[in-house]
Image 1 (cartoon, helix red, strand yellow):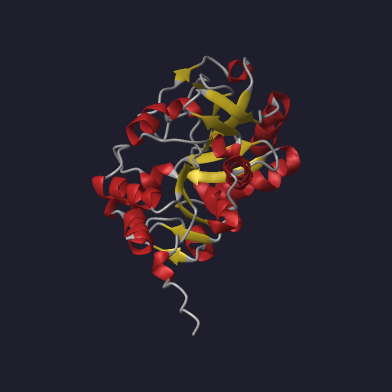
Image 2 (tube, one colour):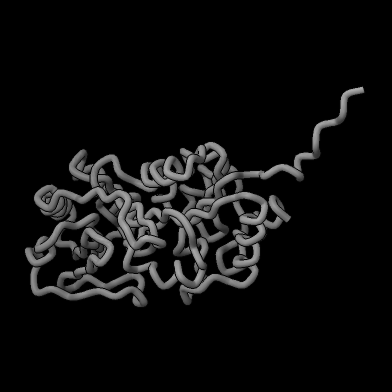
Length: 275
């Protein structure tokens, strides 16, 4: 007599758990709840790797990585950076051509009027520079103000953040995509955060590189996110979960919608899968 197959709950549901940070893994004070900490540990005990995939550049997440005792590659800067915190080494970095970036801002301003811009510099110690009038959406992240826009291009950059005094984020992102074309990838990454990255580079490309380094198939991954910049990641993984506080576009593309990040939405799903 043939033995029955093992029940589904005894298998590792997913070999990779990919999480965005702001509005997803992190609470509003930039901490991770004890329940979510425990759920991530439970998933790791079952054989699933945790991978952070964030729009933040490397310098903005080092303290968090230490708090989480994070191991393995982390995807930063909208997929432009893949970083190894254990060796403090950049495994991959894709800079944004500064002339193209300046040209892209000019094209946006030709359609929308003046905008305010900021940049994340390349490298594990790169600075965030903001021009006059730009307001950081995350006041906890360090930034250095410069006197004029030309100063933004003093060193290589990975991405540009853009704000408009009147247009909504969705309106600015749509206008930016139409105006910029193939000069850059335009995405909406959060409230007050429309960004320009190298053309064709996004969270999906970064996740693919990091998963390959781990010898894992993204199709076996589950991903959590809250904003349109998570759409390429959802298109790559086997199961995409939108937070309850997510942008409508991401909810529409998700396989599942969980509770908001302030209500342990990630933990609810991981407990079901790995508990």
